[in-house]
Image (cartoon, rainbow, N blue to C red; front, top):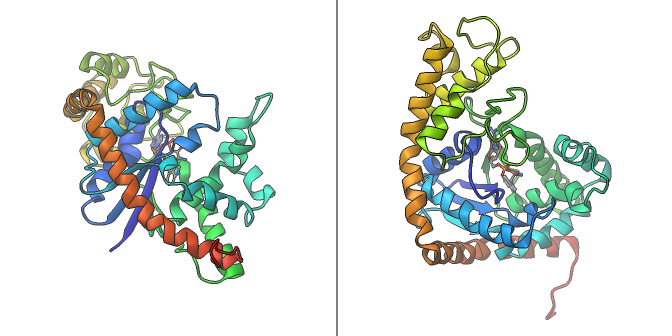
Length: 328
Ligand code: TYM
């Protein structure tokens, strides 16, 4: 059976970029594959975050994922730091990765730019991500477009490790959706939608009320002219709305454009679709929020299942590198 792994930062609330670019695919494939989904709390420590916030956002992210369709009885849903092999394998892979290739990562350059002091972990962030994937022998990794480069590094590290130390890791493939892989900020359509770096009015959370969704879509930045066509270079704002609508309805942005003769009409339909898509998710979030112990128990079960798979892979990697076992 195909093994799938993917991860999400504990930002607290998922936005429609996470949902349309990644999590919806995760929910759709969880029954056809052996699927592992983790909340990457160790990655969250690469930037400033208050301990109380990290704690509450980890739980809220789990609630969001379950509400968005992940069934903890079907897939393996867990918290990254609950399975220590991720961090341990990351160290081994750091001994295979080079400083030069990590320094060239676009996300490192973007996140580190202008900061007085850059955490060492921001540089090694993609190595931990490679460990997340390789420790499960994952075949496929469903992600949005912004993770493409990290996936290429993961493949390079797996191939290098295998050629240096013998066949140890499965070389995984990225699975990036054709539509919805890059949802942009509604106020700044040149920037991807993001909880941490986006604008509040340009970011739609899966928990936003219907009124908030309508307001944000209505105020979305559009472009000069009035014709509705999919043209990312000339019409980034309108193209983003078309992309969101196409992703939400399972159509193509070019095809859907033909139906509209004004920006107002397009915005109305985008708002209507998002309201009906997200209303059940929001309701489920409210229900799950009333049962934090149930969610914690699901994560505990997930960590046990994940550990059972990660431990032998990690043991294989350390033996391949020549690290001795304790009782030999
Ligand atoms: P994160 O938490 O930023 O995002 C989680 C998933 O959502 C996708 N995504 C988007 N897709 C479309 N449009 C957007 N605006 C948008 N914003 C986010 C991301 O591509 C991602 O698939 N480094 C990862 C987390 C990670 C991971 C892993 C992923 C850690 N270990 C192992 C896969 C496998 C991240 O920060 O994702």
